[in-house]
Image (cartoon, rainbow, N blue to C red; front, side, top):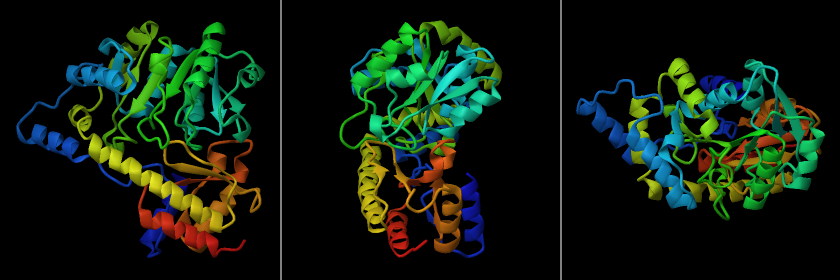
Length: 366
């Protein structure tokens, strides 16, 4: 966000900026979702509070989604619609843990896990992963972290785009069950995969919390809509916390989200474009001598090792922004230990920005 703010300031001053910093689709909500929201507004539908868990039609549709997309049965009563995945994580952390408990987070990983856990009085425990383990945790890594009360995993992941296969998910699930660790899975990039679909933890571990969102595949970031699939032992706590903290997810967003499930052709076309952007960016970075990177299986990021250019990724990103008009994200945001040697590039935006980024970097010399 700090890089985005700097980039916006430069744009306001008349600079042309290539935006590869923010993980936000360059497209808006699908047409069917927009039309459903407009119809609800124009025809006097009362867009007031819904019940805490969400409108029944959307809960049922999400349950059907798991049956149709993954072949697993989900009782709609286990689904809670939330104000974006961010609210889902807050609810999960509050319901599952007590202050002072230790929750494992993978590094590199989404920085808001660490920050939210800390804000809620929990203790984030960094579990370093790398290309050597395909950016996934092993049981040896989990053992080395010491006693854990919780563990957060993401597939596809931010920033590496790694998809955890079913065998890996089962191994992690078994480990957590054996050690009484509450497992939480971030699946907000599901639907954006390039080789094969990402398996869901929903069909593997009934005791896990699974969180998804309409922001990425469904291209609805500003609508602030997501969902949780909960184990029985957390259902009551999450519903009561939702009632007190959020009341419900925005009603108009729920109407739009329900319609978005019927927009798969439009949404799948976005994924085809992301794949093209990925390949263009890999080619462009290679021409600039940046080749040590995690080739993403999903999501829309490239996480590149730039140790041959710097040991201070924050300064490097500032330099690129000032000298080239190229906005990127320093790896320090995702990994407090090794992130100074990495930069994340988001290719979710405009094709011309992806192409131009490669050209700018190819002509740049430190």
